[in-house]
Image (cartoon, rainbow, N blue to C red; front, top):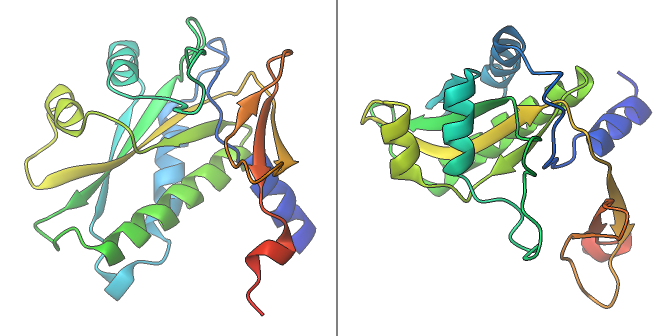
Length: 195
């Protein structure tokens, strides 16, 4: 893959919060995404992450009710009714392999980005959700006690546009315009390189 293709893929792998229910993500696609994530780097090569896939309608709807979306958008209900994700991957840390540590959370980020990039490459999109009812998710999905849910990834076919914008007056909060376009302000390159 040439660098421009990687950059384009990163730009497509945004956080989507509205999905086309007529084009669901299939379990075999999610399995491929997890297979890619498992090949990613892992601190100490401990590989403590396990994944719970949800594609059945009742599980997906139950998971949607256990997640909180887009905290900056107080007056918008997301995902909109009729545009929920069609699948979820719950990333869990297996505490029988190692305790949850700051370094193990790096594994979660690496795996989640691998899933997000893979989904974008396959024509899907998702949203990494850290704001969810952890004990509720564990109980709802009958996740074994040694597995701690640490991140939820909503997946499906996006039916909204998410655009990168410049930060204005120091405000990093994402926002939607009157047409419903979602904008994500990003810091300028010169603001993130330390000299």
